[in-house]
Image (cartoon, rainbow, N blue to C red; front, side):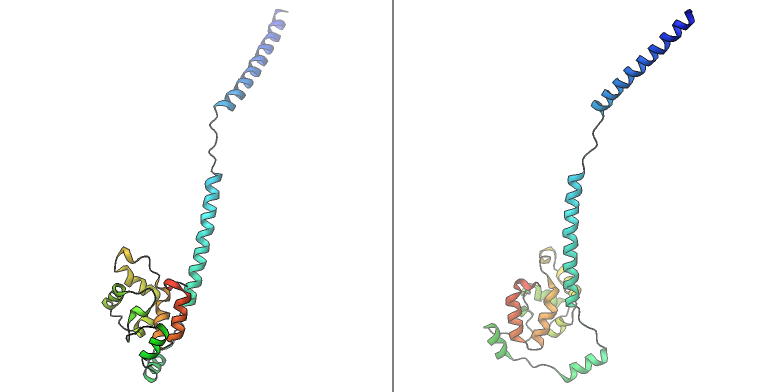
Length: 185
């Protein structure tokens, strides 16, 4: 009989210790557990920034695709150039811009000033025709050669403007520049 009484107390004590341990474990786990960091706010900020960057990328792609010119064969290009060289008409240019315009003055292009014109001259780009045949990437390379202060300029439209000047489309060039201040699309 002693054995049976001891056996019951053994099970009662074991159950009480288990219950107490479970209760203590629950409270210790609830109070001391380091809370998981909340990254939801940072995640939302990154999603917004990502959306802005995607929109900027789409804008850049559209701008780049609108400035690409179809490539024509070298023979056809030289044939066109030999047969049709537009003559510079200073009077038409003056009428459109209200000021005297010199032949092949790169400064007529919105965004190009005397210092940037000098950078283009360093790259042997001295005429409107040469600038019109220069890619926007090459124009950016010319700007980069001048240092950090020229990074604010956007040369994407410069070849197109130079082409209008070369072809003598003074009125269209002046109107375009009026609509697109600072030479931006």
